[in-house]
Amino acid sequence: MEPNNDMILDISHIDVVFPTPKGAFQALKDVDLQINRGEYISIIGHSGCGKSTVLNAVAGLTETARGGVILNGREVTRPGPERAMVFQNHSLLPWLTAYQNVELAVRQVFGKTRSKAEQKDWIEHNLRLVHMDHAMHKRPSEISGGMKQRVGIARALSMQPDILLLDEPFGALDALTRSSLQDSMMEITAELNNTVIMVTHDVDEAVLLSDRIVMMTNGPAATVGEILDIPLPRPRERMALVEDPTYVHCRSEVLRFLYEKQRKVEAIERGKGETAKADARESKVA
Ligand SMILES: Nc1ncnc2c1ncn2[C@@H]1O[C@H](COP(=O)(O)OP(=O)(O)OP(=O)(O)O)[C@@H](O)[C@H]1O
Image 1 (cartoon, rainbow, N blue to C red):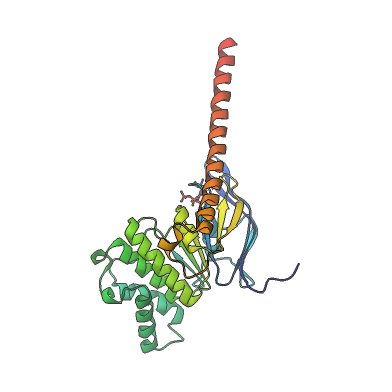
Image 2: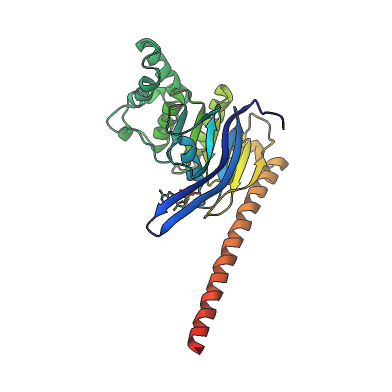
């Protein structure tokens, strides 16, 4: 096979097993995924299937029991600023302003290599990218949820990570704020050509933003079920896409996958119910 020189991240056949009071729980089994530089990947799947666990393994927050995560040819063993994460619930320090929250990250990564003036310019540049320059001296309690999420994204971008890990970044926002952040994300990735892995539950969000959608099977022992290419040209305009046949097709492919998985779960549940009823009947007869 030809070597893939564009590949930045290799999630290579990973298993993740958690110890629980009831014994070992295998969350992921043989998850294998290669991501190219500049790609926007979404991970979608039913609740609890293991989407965040994949992201946490890439972040170096969760150990793998088998296989490994290789970023730029190096195995990931711990968290690092080259993998910046944004969570659903903004994790800003409440006593610091938006500017100071970003400054913390910039100091950590560039404290030794950039002058104070360069760091200031860089912090302001990143806050401008997410349209938060007007409120940079406000504390988290003085800004909306969407604005906090923008600051979280600025903080992640300011570290100039090789890869941006977004765990349902817009999940807690109302529909309008969510759309506006999705648009900002598309502008930013077009400008910076970031590599992104985003966990989402939202099919439209996944199709709008992604180059590929990774659809995961249900857990336990969840794995990559199907991968869907989204061949929509960029820039993408959400309103223009509503009736675009490629958009409609991609959307229905993801929905089909999710419904099929759901039907399987329901069939298994029904099967368990029937077995339980049969057991009960047998024990009565006995
Ligand atoms: N630290 C842990 N210890 C034990 N089990 C865990 C741990 N973390 C996750 N799990 C289990 O692993 C499975 C996958 O969890 P994960 O959070 O990755 O799913 P998810 O697809 O991101 O869920 P959601 O969509 O609801 O956020 C779940 O069954 C969860 O209960």
